[in-house]
Length: 223
Image (cartoon, rainbow, N blue to C red; front, side, top):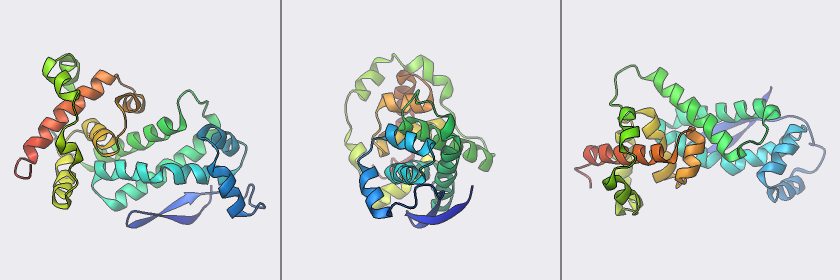
């Protein structure tokens, strides 16, 4: 598949896939019409060869994907490359997409899985893993109490803390980094994250709980 054009994203530029299908219709008119289509309709159009419909899907989700991937990698160039790879993979695989999950969940799963694999390849040193604690902590009363309230720290957006947070996130295991990025930064629900990660909502809650505990320790001088 040929690649052409670029999409501004963060401090870099993201190339996107496209084809010649439906290019005879004026772009502005098509974009206005397609913006009102839901994801399912856009997927069907793309599966029939309408690349303009896929462009709308890219525009709809590229910023959210980029933010999640950036907070997992803490690197703008890597995040742009991974988001680009995600949409290329999605475009190539869309003909076999059967809609058993939403496009939103499906493309997020591609992005998170590719990012986790990238991080594992990039880093060979051992990181503190919390996976073994997931199953035993899900019914912990303290966790249930903590997770039922929104903490003030979730709303913190100070520049210095953001930088330190990005650094601290790199000390978490890949799955824990992903749930923090999706929930605390992107505001995704436990149910959506569970569908993306293919795990239970209890596992999502437990990973968030222990990831926050680790982050609080790493950021104790700034909180």
